[in-house]
Image (cartoon, rainbow, N blue to C red):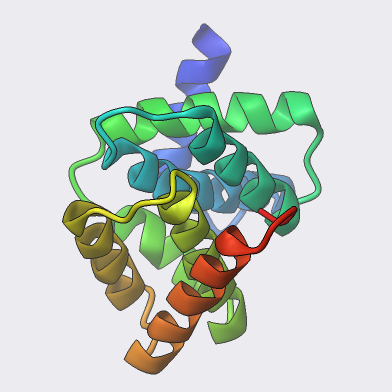
Amino acid sequence: MLRTLKDLFDALLPPQPQASPADAEHALQLATAVLLVEVLRTAPDVGEAERRAVVAALQDKFALTADETDRLIELAQRTARDASDYYTFTSRINEAFELPQKVRIVEHMWRVAWADGTLSAHENHVLWRIADLLHVPHGAYIHAKMRARDAMAAPGDG
């Protein structure tokens, strides 16, 4: 419990110049996970399909074991619940990733949103806000949305 709280507080602090590469990577993983979890939080009922989409996104983006992924999602859920805005997380991603990597995150977020087969206005709004904060151009945002929708509709994929 104390270790998890320490992780949370450490992740919310801006990275220090002397921060180790492992600490910086952990903060980046948490920021990415929080944005994915935010999409989950827009749905009134979170099903297994949405959770699998978050796990798949994190395992695609980072080399994590199943246990590390579960722990990261748990921490991200607490962090997202306590966060007042997205800026802390999007700024960390903006510092670490180039545009193609950020578009891939947005595409994964769309996969989470489409995982239950429907897309709500709230999910659409949250994704638009986050993509804007990640400085993803509108065309790339729309293409990511369509790729995610098509991937989720393809049999045996997703």
